[in-house]
Length: 229
Image (cartoon, rainbow, N blue to C red):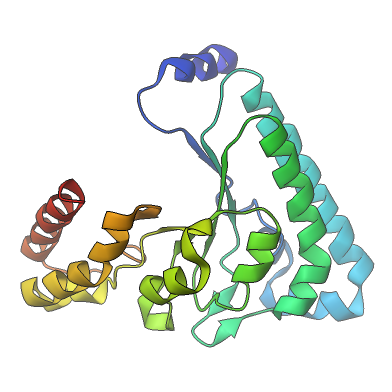
C-alpha cells in the first residue's frame, strides 16, 4: 500500500522532493479553478471568497503532506504558481502579500515543524517583484527564472545572496543556437555553480527547434561544468 511505498523512501540515496504541481499554490491553483480573468477580479469583487479558497488550499496541502510525512521524511516541498508573464505578475506584490503571505506562512511553518528543510516555488515569467514576498513567507528556493522574461540568476544572486537558492535559469534559446551560445550561457552561470546554492538547468522545457546534437552537447558541457564546480 502507499504507506509501505512511502516508508521505503527512508533508505533512499537521493533527495525526495514533493511538488504540488498544477494545484498547490495560492494563485496558480485558484486560477485553474476559476480562470485567470475571474480570479484577478475576485481579489476586488469578492475578497472573502479568495481568502476562503486560499485557506482551503492551505488546509489541503497540510493534510496531504501530513500523510506523507507520517511515513517518510522529505527534503523539499514545492508550491506551484505560474503567476507572471514577461512584463510582471498577474497580481501586484502588495495585494498578493496581503492575501497569500499568511497562507504560505501557515503551510511553511507546518512543514518546517515536521522536519522539511527546504521549500521551493515554481513560477514562470518576471517574478522579480514577488521574490521578497516569497522570502518573507519562508520559501528559500525559486525556479525556473525565465531568461526571455528578463530573469537573470546572476543578478538575482547579487541582490539576495545565498539566502535565496535557485534552480535552472539557463536560457533555453541557447540550445537552439548551438555550441558557441551554449558555452557562453554555461560560462555566465559558472560562478553560481562554483558558489553553490544553485542548480543549473534550462529555464523551461526544451523547445522543439533544438536539434538533438545540440541537446547532447549541452548535457555533456553541463555535466562537465558541475563536476568542475
